[in-house]
Image (cartoon, rainbow, N blue to C red; front, top):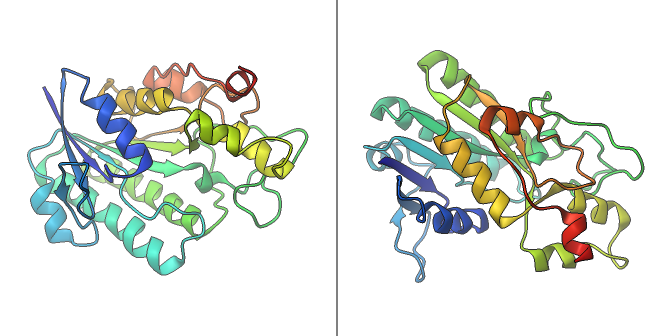
Length: 259
C-alpha cells in the first residue's frame, strides 16, 4: 500500500482529493492542515517551519503538496514565505526521509502571461489564443504566479540533484459545476468568462489527474503538465498529461454549461 501525505487538505482541491484518495484501496492517505477544522481529522502542519515539516513528513512514499497561499492577489511576503520556502521545506523533508515522489500543485498563473488581457490575472484576450503546452517556459502573471514558477524550478533542482520523482501540475481553475455557471455568462466580463471556460478543472478530473500523478510509473522526471478538463476553449494543452500520466479528462465546460 502506498502511504501518501496530503498537505493543504482543508482547501477546495484538498477536500476533493481526500475523498477520492480514500476510495482507493491501494492508498493510505494522511491529511495535513495548517489549522484545526471541526469537520476534518487531520494533523497540523506549518510548512514554514522546517523542523515541523521534517518531523511530520516521515514514513511516506508520496507527498501531494497543496499547502500554500492560493490567491493570485497574494503579496510577495506571503507567497515567498509560504509557497517558496514552504515548498523547499517539503522537498528537504522528502530527501531526508527517503520519500519517493512529490506531486507539486503549481498553477496556470505560472504561465498566465500567455494570452493575458491587461493586469487582471483571471482575464484573457478574446479571439484566437496562443497554445500553451504543459512544459511551456514559465511566464507568471502575478507574485503568486512567480512563486509557483520558482517552486517548479525548485522541484526540478531536487529531481536532478537528489533523484527525487517530481510531478508539477499546472492546475487550471477547480470549480464545482454551479461555481462554473456563476463564473460565466452574459453578466460576466467576456475576458473572465473566457478564462473560466478555458481553465475549468472539474472535481472528477481534478481527482483523476492527481491520482495519476501520485501513482503511475513515470517515464521521466521531473514531469510538468497542465491540469485542466477537456474544455472546448482551453488553450493549455493536456496532450503531455495524457502521454506522461495517462490522464484522460472527461468533463468539458461547454458541455456542462449547455447541459
